[in-house]
Length: 114
Image (cartoon, rainbow, N blue to C red; front, side, top):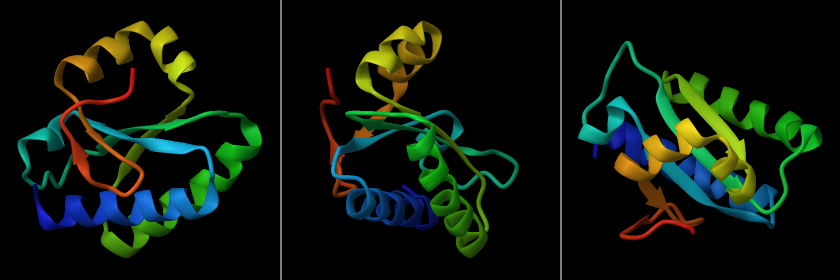
């Protein structure tokens, strides 16, 4: 995994863990799965929480914006509950097929959430 991607995962995981008690982890999917930096591609992530609503999204986006500015990256984040994530069938299938799960500490896990 590239240093920049690793840093994004760590900072985002730490920020979410500190801000939200119900943060369960991140799934990485898309172009960045190959471990290389892609200048013209977004870092695609799904963030899992116990609850997800408008007020939470309002707190999430400033965190994303700060990381994008500081690290000169573009992040495409999908905040979900696990139940809501499963209902987005196309995205869920794609992520479950190829995605990589990082626990709330930003550590890669062999198995994601069920």
